Length: 400
Ligand code: NAD
Ligand code: NA
Image (cartoon, rainbow, N blue to C red; front, side):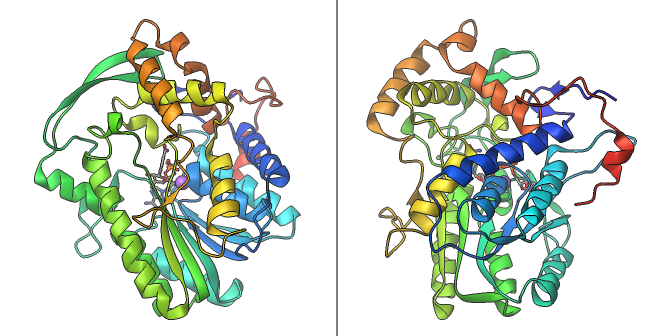
């Protein structure tokens, strides 16, 4: 079969396996020649390893100078009668293949990271086959639902404002159009549920359980990812439901840092740059900001994707030249520093004011935005022959 891109709204309904493989190789090539991670970890667990920041973290840690063995946990779907499967499914497979070529472990667990059984499987594997200890745990899950561990009932996150509703344009990638959208205010229950899904509770639970199992090495670090952004986007992000959840995550970072002190360990939250990922395209009214940001950062030569961000995080902040991890007054790592640079933000506000549904494809960097989105799903990559027939049976034989 020939695999065509299928996009519904902002969701990709198909993925190209060999395009995903090419994207993995491109990221490996980037970190192989970038400033290396010196003094980095050797045994790493990545929760949310199959796409976005989690995948980029895994690639940076394995191929960017640290030569880490990695365990990746993710929720993905393989090929079936219904289709070819998700991009993350193939990212897992091709990451592992590349890691093994270098003599590194790239173990994949595919299933629900929130479940007790996943925690147990991972712990058993660490004890029996992974050398017994971790020296870094990366928490990079992004999802809309989390089951309550007590009742099994689902908490659902909402992307809403708190206080006043906001109207703002949103991009439809399927139709290449920009449409006005009203973002409603959240109820108390919605705020609470979003905190349950995207806050720090599950991160804390993972670290507690790993710690009780005795699989955290002395000096073990853990990191989770956050977003803050400029004041112009506060109503839709930082001061909305997602931001509330992130504030909880930041507090969890401090809590875990205290807990890990016992073994000489540390916990951090890294505030990252706004990027196109499977998760971020859902944030309403956010796309004009990303379009303007990409354009300005591109023009200034400071644009980064997930892989550039993660290589910089691990080589310049969490490991590398500094005696202590550099943080701001709230103890957050700021790898969003180039995004929030005064001159970048001044130019971004000017550009955002000019963006309209009629001109957004040319005034902002929509080309980059859409290309990033397509490439997340293995499409629009150079060096891939999209006319070549893909053998579904051969793909079914590939295992994570
Ligand atoms: P993503 O959608 O690309 O990746 C999410 C990962 O979580 C995938 O590997 C997915 O398989 C996994 N996952 C989801 N539900 C799961 C489950 N139940 N069990 C196991 N795995 C599951 O998302 P992303 O954008 O890379 O987000 C990662 C983190 O980075 C989030 O905390 C996000 O808020 C943060 N962040 C994102 C941006 C951005 O602009 N994209 C900016 C700053 C911070
Ligand atoms: Na991720």
